[in-house]
Length: 254
Image (cartoon, rainbow, N blue to C red):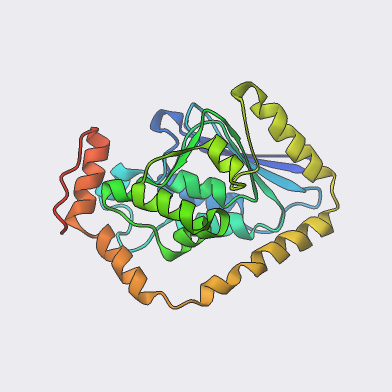
């Protein structure tokens, strides 16, 4: 039976593994529900850190477009937001180990973790404009927080992937290392976090999250309306179908 998502707790480390490599770890509703459950509630008394990783050559290609086209994903909302909010709110540090491309929702999943260690062969991208979609306020806000307005514009408006090495140089992710060094580098981060004082880790994560919460109070109903209009458009249906069929989309602005 395909588990799609596996959660293992061993001593101080909780490991959450995306297990859908045959679909580039695309996030369907089952995976989203299980991801949310993996970060619900309080960590165990021995836990100090969580690790998010994936099987196969791709970290995560984002929301399952075939599911969205079938109407199984609500048009006016992003089901991944609940998952990302749970990761962000988990009281202890979360480390993403990114062995391959992290696109759209996969990019957001990685960047909602506290620290990202990636292979230099990986790329990060937000290809939504290329398929007629748009990110919610919640999703775009994280890009601004971690990358600043210049990188956020490049990721969102162009939609082309950015190499992990460049993100590391910009300080968006913690490290980008050659593939053969990825596991050892990630282990050093995890071991360091696991050895730190748990009350300090909780306090510091809460402090960092609170410092960025001011953006939640900015009025954005008009922006939400634009995002929902894009998601419900004929262009979005055409863009998603074209991406699944590996052809160039024909956008008409409606």
